[in-house]
Image (cartoon, rainbow, N blue to C red; front, top):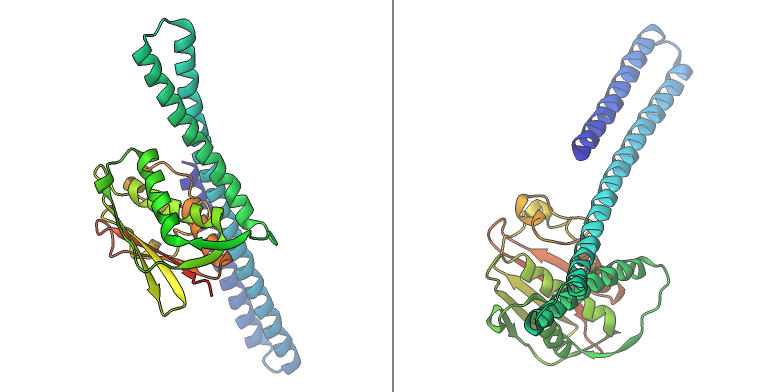
Length: 297
């Protein structure tokens, strides 16, 4: 309901701006017809009309951007609230059960396992929010060191398998030549983990993710993460790396997330002198995400 109301507000202000421009043009044309002999007034009128139209257009653009930004912030707050509240509620429920009831050792160990999983999920959400703040901080220095990208990829694959509870055959790795990059190990690890975990989450009930590394023109190393999942409409490929943005559709909204993972990936790529992009033939055709970083000299 809130989104529909804001869309109506956007449509209203765009219509209002167009009507104001039309009225200004009609008044000006009428004024020119009545005062066509006054050359100086005609020039001033043209200038005034241009300024009015430019002002209305700029005002409308900024208004629409602000409304969309507020929508993104609201969606982010709702997603973060859900991602924080759900694990806290689960942990509290199991703790209350352990406190008020006699539980056998097998169930007790299962409760502990679930609570650890939920606390890990809670910590991951908090880390992602904090990392986003650091990525947007101007002037923050990188802790640069030599990094073996292949070792980082293998570490992130093992972490994804453990956290997401998927079988080893769901993750397929094709390493290229062993190359090193210069960068911040924590940031590179976060970007690689986000790409792999994102591919698994959007692959459906039986994920199949293929990870490849390759050298490009002796200057860059590329990491390609390909899934066989729901795919991405081509109109959304440029938007999915924006902060707080989640592609519309019933399939994507079922996947838990706060719209920061891909934003972090692109931020890390830019800070390291590389780039990141997505490829997809459309819904149902799977997706490929590429992270390209410069090779250490």
